[in-house]
Length: 146
Image 1 (cartoon, rainbow, N blue to C red):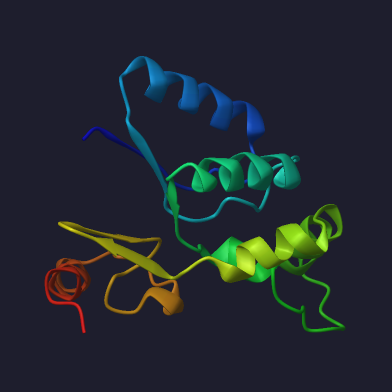
Image 2 (image 1 turned 180 degrees about the horizontal axis):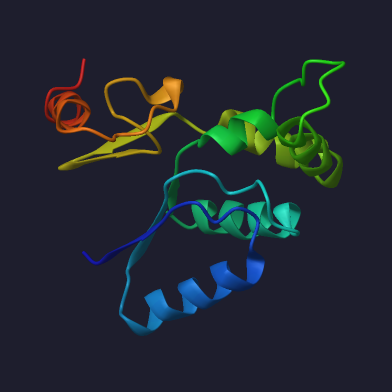
């Protein structure tokens, strides 16, 4: 099976469409979305709708940190650029779209692979895998899930 992997789409519908078209031309039989469907980009709702439809046809998707932020309550009173970005994204999404993001799993295991947005040993910490030691811990967790 030829699997097309998509990560960090960040609400860029045009890039998603181009990558999906490329995957189709390359003969991809299935799609996997590795998180961060939203954040930064201008079309979070359109991206979610497209990915949701693909998931209905067998695609897989896991939650990224931006998906988690967009589907949770913001701490009131914060005025950072990051909070402003999340608040903007939240205002663009319907309740149904936010619930879709909230319902995405942190990981997806299937036969011989594990899908995760961040480190497999601590997917909810959103930790970057930046050292050989962190890479080894992530790989070990992927090879020996709990």
